[in-house]
Each structure stands twice: as structure tokens, then as C-alpha cells.
Length: 228
Image 1 (cartoon, rainbow, N blue to C red):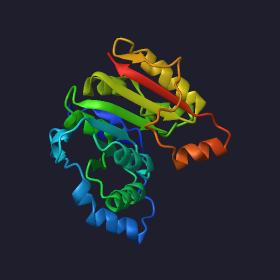
Image 2 (image 1 turned 180 degrees about the vertical axis):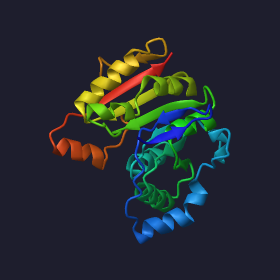
Image 3 (image 1 turned 60 degrees about the vertical axis):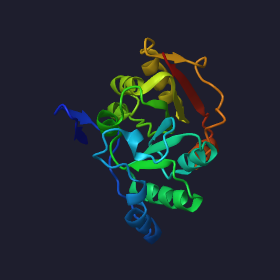
Image 4 (image 1 turned 120 degrees about the vertical axis):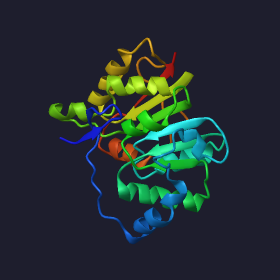
């Protein structure tokens, strides 16, 4: 069982299993040469201070290969973006894309999202949190690994300012129902903006994960919540 230690000394179940994967030479160069430029320093107490230009901050949790992250940062230059991802090949690809696009409104954290939120995201400091196509952990015995858990969603609510948005998307119908039920149980924190789902908002790019799901005949579910 993969666990991580929180600042309070307790052991937490991780929402991921770290799989380094095979890095291409280009991805390795990107990690060596570009990560220092884009990395959110682990000692940075407030993630907002990592950006040269102050702007509303959006966090994408689990950005995969960075396709959505890079697209959103390019299309929304009025916002800063923090991407959280632990898969090294995906981070390497994202770094190369960020460099090629000349974007400076993105920072990357290669650490557990729970750790980042506990240590580096100040209460009320975020405008939005976006979680797109997270690992559904379909086996029942693995459901405790799902990133969408009541305690973590409460953390997100604390990090978001009033009126802040929580946007999730998945192509796994049972996980969409899980998300709806978990966040629906926090109705003193979040207000659902759909019945219970919404059409894909214009800010969410279509990615290979979505195209793969559609190719397998899966429906796509977008969930949008506003912080009370």
C-alpha cells in the first residue's frame, strides 16, 4: 500500500503509485534543463509567490502529458497555472511544450497533490481547481486511492476563495457517480452547477485521454461546482 506522511505525522493513502516509466532522451533533457525553471520549489510556502506576475491562480491536478495544461495556459494568459503530476515522462513532455510555446504563467510540482495543498496552497488563494480524467481505480479494493475523497475535496474547498470553481471530468461513468456523491455530501461547501453534469466548458481542451475514452465508446462527464 503506497502511503505518504502528512505534516501532522499521520500516514495517508496516496492517490497514485509512482511509475517513473521510460524517459526519452528529450524528456530527460527537459527534466534536467527545464524543470529548474518551471518547478514550484518545495520550500515555497505560498505557491502564488512562484510567479513573476501576480494573477488569479488555477491548479490542475494530474496533468498527464500536459496537453490540457499547456493549452489552457496559452488560451488564458490572464491566469497563472500550477500543474501537479508525478509521472516523469508526462512532466518531461509538458516542459518541452511549455518551453516551445514560450509560456511563463505555469509552474509544475512533481509531488503528491495532498502534500502540495497542505504545505503550499494558502486558504482562499485559488480561483479554480481542475481535475481532468484522473485514474478511476476501478477495482473496489482500490477505491480508497481515488483522488476524489471527501477529506481532500474539503481541502480544495478551503483553498478556493468564495465563488471559486471546482471542475472535474471523467470518461468512467462509475467514477462520475462517485464524484457526484462525494461532492454532493459537501453541500455546505460546494454548489453543483449541473443536473448533475454540465456540457464541456469552453476552457477545457479535448485531450488524448478524452479521445481515447470516446474511441472506446465511453461517455464524457463534466462536473462543475462553485465554492459557497
